[in-house]
Amino acid sequence: MRREFQKSEIEETLDKVCNDNLFTNSSTLQKLLRYLVEKKLLNEDLKELTIGLDLFDSNYSVDKHDGIVRTYIYKLRQKLVKYYAQPEVNDPIIFEIKKGQYNLSFQSPNELIKSESDKSIKIPLQKLWIGLGIALIIGTVILAKFNLEPETYLWKPFLSPDASNLVVISDQYVVSETNQYDEEHAVLYPEINNDDQFLKYQNENPERKLRRTDYSVMSKMAPFSIKSITEWLIPNGGSFDMKLESQLVFDDIRKHNIVFVGQFKTMNLSKAIFLKDSKVFSTYIDGFKYSIGDETKVYNTKHGTQRVEYAMVSYTSISPNNKVFYFVSNNDIGVMATVRNFTSPDWLKDFASKIPQEAKHFNALFQVSGIQRTDMSCELVELEVIE
Image 1 (cartoon, rainbow, N blue to C red):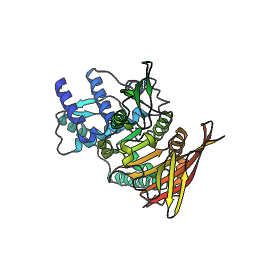
Image 2: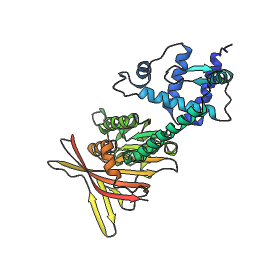
Image 3: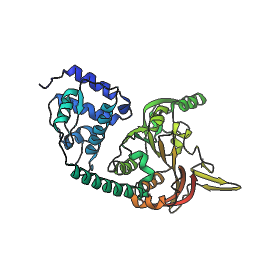
Image 4: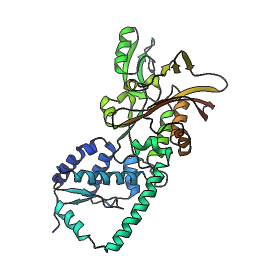
């Protein structure tokens, strides 16, 4: 006889699963699991479009969003399998999502064992060997294809099924200032980009009537870059959470692969990592400085008929298991152009040929120019390979 579970028992088990280390690093998977359990308790039949509209985008389209829901359902199913495979887990309720379905079901361990045993079938030995041979050939072809595709090798840590990725977006601290006419308006100060800098500036300039605000601002590079990263990671089986640079803490850096997009002038915590291993590069005014031996080159923003700016792409490690990609410029098009290129298979394949396979890290400086800041060219001008 099928066992009926109490709602309190289901909710208690759900909290236990979500608080496990396998789930604590992914707020998206936690949210999806809680959503599926809630809908199961309401006996609602779920479809991909329903989940997409409720959790991902109020304008969700199955075609436009290219399988985001299917990707996360697959990742959740895999996480649940790993969770229940842990020897210390002995939950009274098992959350199961059958292949090809979006609805979650509640099973007791005994029911699940019986269900799996009923499905067992006998395979003739000859057919079994044939099947194993075919599987081995297919696996070899897939592995060879994977190893022959350098256009994705930089992103492999981000595309691993166990990867926990965080996209960090630089943002500018905003203060409110009251002028001599007692009018209050928002102001951006280059000297202020966190609470400590605000207090320091306030102490040094007591005549200014300043107060904190509860918001920050981002430039247009943010939505354009997020679009490129989404269209690259999601179809390739990756996923990510997002956070503003102003909210970043060291625990985020320790637990995630990081993709940073934005300006170095608005960095806070990220300054401690960006270019930390470089022997030749440093930031300089509105660009970068390249120094090797007695030679020093300055790559700073150039104004004129066609604006020229510089962007740095830095690929390094933040722990033995986690990688970080920095897409940094002090201007929009530098960030947008480099993100666009590093999420383009053809462009990445060409760039990969310049990097030795044994290289662990690199810092690449690009010159970016654009007519009316839309038609962007992106040329590699300096490259530092760190083995």
